[in-house]
Amino acid sequence: MLDDVFFRELTAAESALLTTATLENLNWCGERFSAIDVSTRSEFVHYTILDPYRGDFGWVAEAGNEAIGVVWAQHLPPDDPGYGFLDEDTPEVSLWVREDWRGRGLGRALLRRAQDDARTRQVPRISLSVEADNYAKKLYLAEGFVDVPGREADGVMAWSP
Image 1: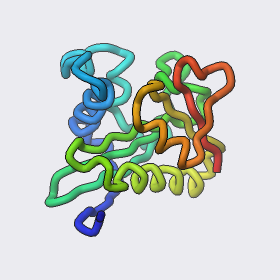
Image 2 (image 1 turned 60 degrees about the horizontal axis):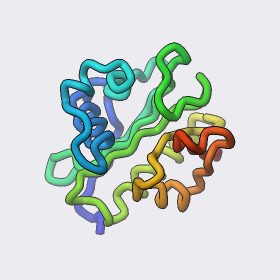
Image 3 (image 1 turned 90 degrees about the horizontal axis):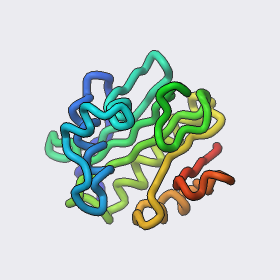
Image 4 (image 1 turned 30 degrees about the horizontal axis):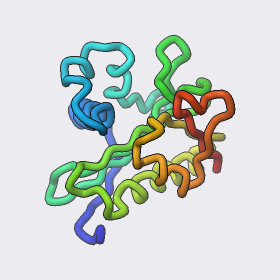
């Protein structure tokens, strides 16, 4: 199914890809936000910046030289937390798969790469936030993510190697 897919590390120069991915993640259930929102609202802007110096990492899936999916993990600071923020030592993961590639195992493959990276980097856990009705929650549960006690209403989940 994924024979034509190439995986490579995400670079800090790919903020345009992260902007697209963030916008589509926010609008998973219909148009709620615009590209201007993603590039101007502080609660979204930080998702478009990969900073390897703070320990951020990620992977891009490509087919035909086009990005069709991306997963990235960010060490966001307490004064600029993401929706799935737990603490400074826990990177928050975001995952996006282009709509026409969903349902083929690409999201799972990307998520597992992030989990493998977390193991290699000896990260104690990774977190994320997912809305209750988002079909991606089934993937996260299947890959070992669990609801964070007290943060269930925010959709915060965590995974430990």
